[in-house]
Length: 374
Ligand code: SF4
Image (cartoon, rainbow, N blue to C red; front, side, top):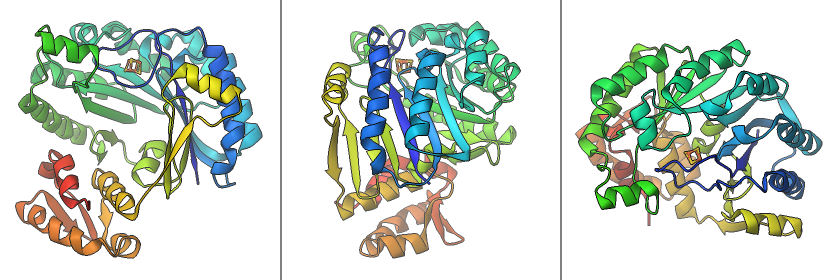
């Protein structure tokens, strides 16, 4: 079943590390809602005519949408698609937006899962990253969502933040696992080019994240998650058994999805497309009835490389039978290149599947690059 992504390109303020597409001016939010609805109608035939399995509001900050704006989008989704009865419908949300009133509003929409950008329970970290919320907001928000009746919850945390010791990271993890959420996504702080953080690091105002510390904190994360009964099902993602993110899993399983809104990506198995990452130009094109997407035909090599890159990051790994049936011409290269990683213990081959060992997860990108064909 297919998947739908909607990119909401607005944020209250710019987090210093962020290189996603967003605007801090919300003046054109109403127009953007109209444009998303129009693009939905223009592109509905790009997905197979079967029920949507997941809908994901990402961004940016989707929790800036009002209840009315959300309901208008859901009405348009209902007019153009059908939703599977058990569809997973996720809204990314920042803690400062999840007031009791907003949570009550969400209860009257089809949203049934929140992915909450907590990032840290420490004010020092939140200020360094220029997050719009406080540690107190972060500590209260999950309970508030649960009290409001939204019980499928994911929390995002960041590690490797300069000044975040291993002991403080463990306290953040303990705080998170005490909340009773079902899903946890953790990313290490990376210094992306052209961000405020890159400028601060270059000027010496902020220390660059330390690679060795990031590695230690990743290992602490995997240990604490296992202690809490969470399955490490993708490099950056952990869940209680059966609570894996169905939408994100569709990306890692190479399932078709349609992405709407500025900068959104789409995939249909043979082509990948990306919408222009510019709000004004996106609005202009959609208003003119033009596409905002650039389509790229994937070569056999690219399809294979993408398969390797995404599957290797997951606990379900690369199935030998699928490798041989879908990518027979590349399978010999895969076996040759995988052998040294098997010998070093960074990859494993068990029950007909290739996957990364715990040590190999620290080298995921390097191992995938070695398995690629050019
Ligand atoms: S709220 Fe999210 S999308 Fe917006 S600037 Fe911060 S990290 Fe980026």
